[in-house]
Amino acid sequence: MKTISLLLLATAAFAQEGVTVNLKSLMADYKKKVVAIAGAFKPEDLDFKPTPEVMSVRQIVTHMGEANYSLCAQLKGEAKPKVAGLAESFDYCLAAIEAVDGKMAQKTTAKNPRDKGWIALHLLEHTALHYGNLITYIRMKGMAPPKG
Image 1 (cartoon, rainbow, N blue to C red):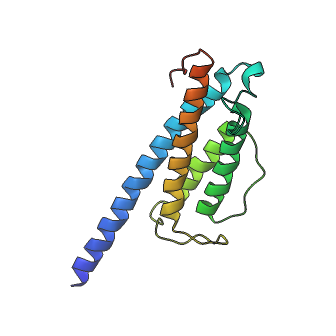
Image 2 (image 1 turned 45 degrees about the vertical axis):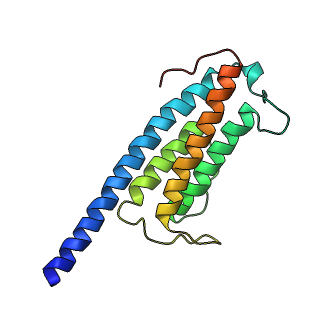
């Protein structure tokens, strides 16, 4: 019986490791794409917004960096660090994802605690959402997204 329990625990740990490896790979790919697309906008286009109700390019990029720090600080179990640049926020998240390996079921210490796995998946969802916004915006400006 003990052997079966250990086998189940090892399988669960291996499954989580696969999740974090894949999540880190996806976030590293998004880092390349998001940083490239943010840098492809001309300075005069950073305040572009398709309609008055939505965020501008600058606001999306700033929001993504702040959200990365906020979410990944929860993964690391520490206070949100001072916000630096967009690329640095992705580096911070990549380190946080590595630190949470095998601990996806742990609760965060935030005001409204969640499983770290939920935070990690929300990070991916949030990044994909705003990357899609940036793709739309750059196409509306008549440019193709950079190859990333």
